[in-house]
Length: 420
Image 1 (tube, rainbow, N blue to C red):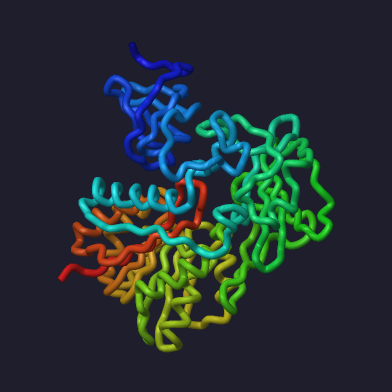
Image 2 (cartoon, one colour):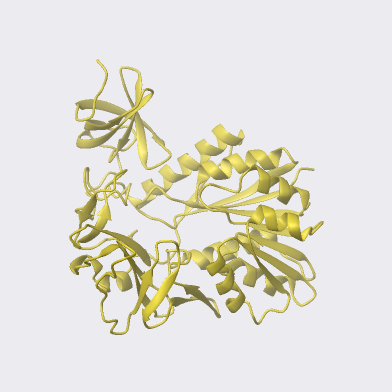
């Protein structure tokens, strides 16, 4: 008999799969189970069905795996907050599961057999208290919370256990937000704190807090902000350099991420004085600045960023570096317009969907000696690596970082070089 939402079944859990789930089978049908671990037998409720698969939440663990523990957050349970995927697993086990997912995606989508180790990064307390930017959803009655898994439903919470202390101190879930659709809480490592409040309707201004040492910004839902109190963004420090990030602009949310990724990119590329480097999807200029310091006054760095706000921030952050050129525009169109010819180094840090075939072809056409690919999704990374292989570039180095403990997300830095 086919499964239907609400059915409760016993399942033997097999392997981990991409997306914070494990695979089980029921009468031959693949079932993707949350709140389970490989090797367990669970009693699960079906939450969704499709022709070729179903989804379920583990309600009871009949046979537990080694490494299972009680989730530290009371909201990280079936039917509640969907933000965390692996709070029921010890951190070393979480990292092994993420490594297995990366390896499986590389093998399946790129034909690569790679041994993967996911590295811990300083800046969290046993996987908690690290997220420096948290986006809260708000119900029509003004209650702030986090969304259920694969749902628009809002779960009211007391506090988020993976939120950084500076975010928790802002107390968003404990306040009322009439007229707001979302509230982003930001705690920059430069000491700045901000709240970005997005209205539910463009015709009605939401109630806003007074500020009191916290910048309060009114968001337009499209990335733009209006400063109501304080600065229109926050400062983020990396080494001896400070970066300005306006409004809801992108910045890594783990305190140790920016330094760890910068070091990995520089290790992968080994830039030399006088070289020409291209930083694609350059954001506010994190990798651009590091590259400029290595290629020196005889070198050059070309940064390309599609978001207008981020490109504007990059120009501010990099204004003291005369060898840097910042271009705003789609990466593929801008590369074609610039006609750079041959370059020495490329950093590729695309969004979660990956760079895609057109950008891969354009990068390969620049004939760089080395490409450093920073990836937040292992499936997108694997697809793009397969594309690079068609142009003679091979993966020869890979590091993975646990920048999102308790969740299924993981960051990779891959090095590609021409096959010899």
